[in-house]
Length: 172
Image (tube, rainbow, N blue to C red; front, top):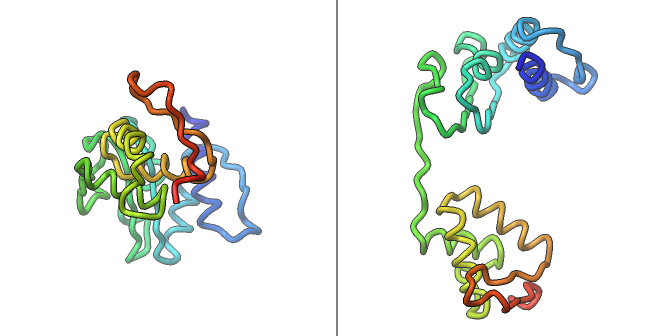
């Protein structure tokens, strides 16, 4: 795990530094902490730590405490486990709620098709994709971007429609 943390620190340091300083090799987590503290104290920054797992060492190695950072710095941490977030750096907890089915379909349709609702020929497939995401906004946006960028045929996902295919190029 030590190498993984140093790698994450190197990515953060690269984002905090100018191009001439990026790509520095981090010898160990302690050295990475010292460098992050010195860089992040120079000016306010926005740091996003995505999908932090149950290992508190990740947060301690990347954003140990408030006194590391310049006033006005914001740190956004996404995790499935609220318990991994130490009170020493968390001011506000915000729990993302699942969207209702109509809201999820609208979000998916907007990103995939550029409209609030899919056309009738794609509605069934869109509803099944929405159901698979559990109403999670990021999952909906990711899947809709895949649909748009790939121009693939999307089969209905349920068994009763398994033989039907729809070409997405015809959705407008």
